[in-house]
Amino acid sequence: MNNRNRGKNTGDDGLFGSQKQVDKLKMAAQDMRYLLSRDYPEKASSELVGNRYRLKTRQIQALRGAAASAQQIGNRKLKQAEVSELKDKVVYLDGFNVLILLESLLSGAYIFEGADGCFRDLSGVHGTYKRVNQTQRVIELAALFFQKAEIRKLVWIFDQPVSNSGRIKQMVLDYAEENQLNWEAELAYNPDKFLAESSEIAVSSDAWILDHCQQWFNLIEYLITEEKLDVHLIKMV
Image (cartoon, rainbow, N blue to C red; front, top):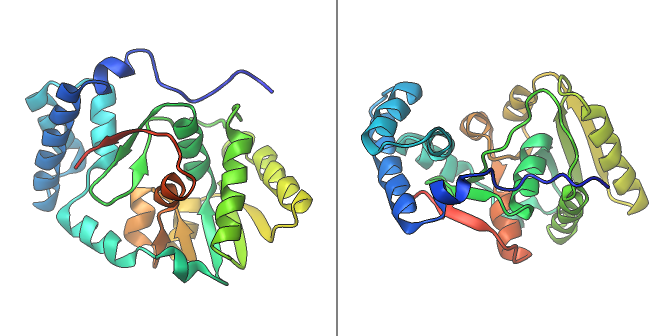
């Protein structure tokens, strides 16, 4: 096991750790929602709001991740599945989206809750995925969810172009075999499109997927509540 994790960046406590900064971010998020709801472009809106509140780059990144228009928020809420609706269903899981977000959460990084009720982080896959100390625990949490929700089959979808996607796919399949879980794992060249066009329930907090899929489930919210996860949470609403 290596010593990697996805914890806070140097300086994150200064950007997100005080009530003053959180209040500033909340006001910025309100302004951002106002602009997006009136069809202002996201990039221009975030630059305008960022300048108004003198936000730093990572604060703007958090703001963009959590921002959505009133129409998007309403649409996402309508399509959100309850855990009771997952019983005996096939569920598709956005592999890297869920893995990295939960790895960040378990590492003590700041997690941001948007007006759509979804949780997002400031990490990402930049062409290569590297497993961290928390990766195994994330897979175990997915297994707890799978069993408690009585899901018929869970299918993990990973980005084929990302380096090491084959390795993490195999890690998931090995764990499923050892624990007799009805899981599959697939590599897709465009997992966002794949998940959005699927008729199955999608597990993701990716904004584009949430806007285009038929139905989705908020796994992070479920796990925080059900497994009583300790989280450095910033509510952007």
